[in-house]
Image (cartoon, rainbow, N blue to C red; front, side, top):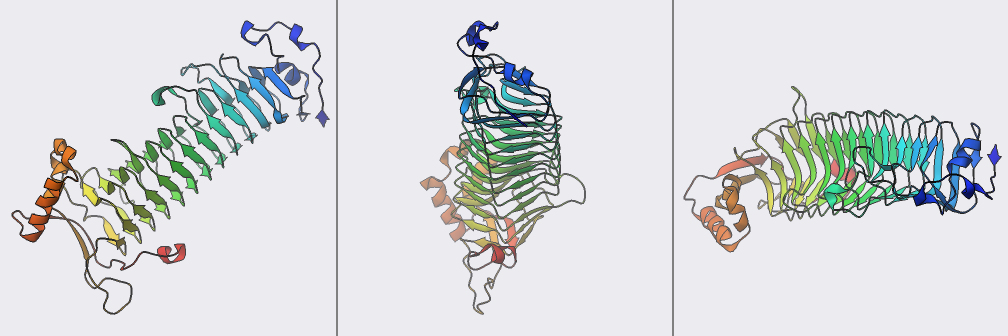
Length: 413
């Protein structure tokens, strides 16, 4: 059933001083019954509002709800409600209260096609399952990066679908203690962590575009996550990375494009669980300062059919300086110097990567200032020409591809 409400004299109700010029939207909600669809007249209304029954609010892209800079704009405490085509703005600034455009505390709700801006946090889901968050445009308050709130935050929330949202100038999208969620088709620009997992398992991350964030995707203590088809670029800065692992196991990183980052993929004690494997397959890892960076000499990762192109350093290992305990199979390396005499697309000799003098910066951190400088390049050239110390083999790919894969099917073969 659809109910239409006209607003005539709601401004005479008692309102906070900050909202005196806007009629309160809560009056519409209080008059609704379960199953109603509210389509209020165009205009700006005062929040905050609380929804406790399954109703649909459709703003038809002409309705703004202004929180007046106090607390959360909409508290959604129902199952089966919908918020769509609304402009939600101007939450409070408290991180302790998680002041947000929308706080969700229910299941099977739909939040789609809304504009959420000037809110500290965008959408916060706590112990809320099987919700849909789709095609929203989300940005935080104009604070410094560390003081912004998260665009989307999941906490103990299962089976949600976070799809095709546009996120700009927020802090993180975080998934904490949450399982079986789908994060697909979203874009994130100029944030800190475009996507950050903590203690979260069996999630899927597909076809997202993450650009100019400090970190693209970071997995901490999160197992059985599938990361496929994402575009991650320009994660720069001292700690910039495309995809990072910390004690995470049984992860699949497949068919992603990771380019122009300080570090393409970073691995720290991953995989962590015994007898598990991380599979890094058919990714393009290109034009990064470091393609793959291992925090230490670890094992259990399989690198297959990836393309390593234009990286200043293809693979580096901190401390132990070797990554040969991992599996390197059929990758394309643009610095491979072998031949393919029988034309089968596989190099006649293995690809081997060694640590020469130019990687002194891995053992003596202050020398990183000179990384890429002429003096280190000269030392590297001289040591390759006539080694004055025994180089360390970092990795060996016994069957390197002689040319980059031209299609997804070929890369996954």
